[in-house]
Image 1 (spheres, one colour):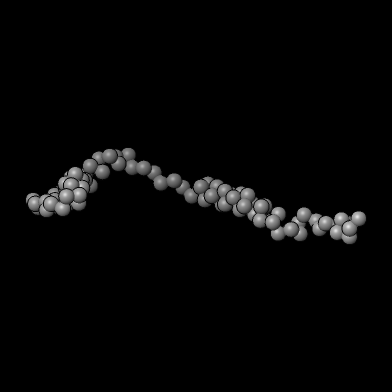
Image 2 (cartoon, rainbow, N blue to C red):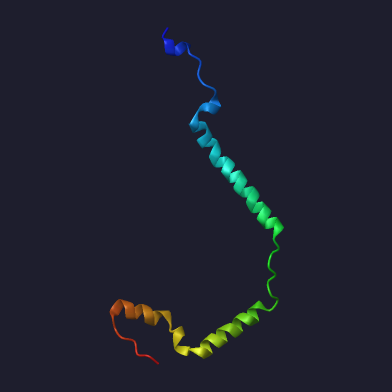
Length: 89
């Protein structure tokens, strides 16, 4: 028998590859615990009851401030494809 076959191998925790394999799942467990802590310790923001009406009002104020800023996407796309100048309103 050769000399290498008779020598005992090192314990599993002395190999670096083992720790590299263990580190991935361990990191995921730590990150999930931290995420659970953040989710349980902070309050969720309450959605306003009349969010839809406020959104409509925001759109109206944006449209009133600059009506040309909301040009149809087809005009912009056609202008980019053909190179034709689109007249401003």
